[in-house]
Image 1 (tube, rainbow, N blue to C red):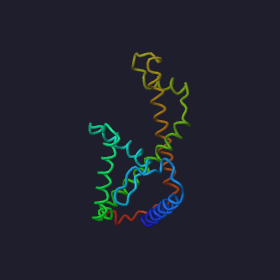
Image 2: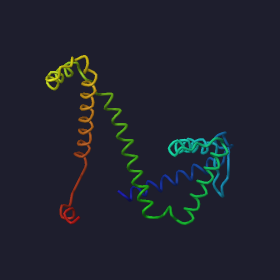
Image 3: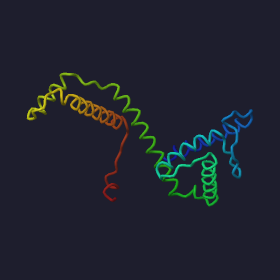
Length: 190
C-alpha cells in the first residue's frame, strides 16, 4: 500500500514538473503573471489569489485581517521564505513530517469520499408519511404533543437513521468485497 502511494506521489510530481515546463513554453495568461519572485519561486496571480483566501481564513481565526494587498503579499512572502528554509534543512524529508502528510492525505481522501457518498445517500432517502405516523404512535405515545408539532423532528430523525443505516451498509459491503486477513498472534502481541 505504501509503495503504491509512493509511486502515486512520484507520478504526481512528474506530472507537475512536466506541466510546469509546458506552461513555460507559451505566452503567460493573466493568472500566470508573476506577482513576486522569492529566490527561485515565482508567485503567480493565481497563486496569490488562492493563497489570499487562506490568509483571510487564518486571519479570521486569529483575529487579524490584513488590510491591503501589500500586507497579504508580505505574509505570503514570509510564508514562502520559511518554507524554503525548512526545505533547505530537509525538514520536508523528515519521517515524522512525511507520516503526518500521509495521515492528512488519507483523512482528506476519506472525508471527501464520505461527503460524496453521503450526498448520494441523502438524494436516495425518502421518508414516507406512514413512517412518520408509525414513529409517532410507537415512540411518542406517552407524550401529549400533537403530531403536527413534532412531525418535522420525527421526519428528520427517521431520515437521519435511514442515512446512517445506508452508510453502514455501504461500508460493510466494501469490507465484504475486500480481502482482509488478520494475524491474531501479532494482534495479541501488541
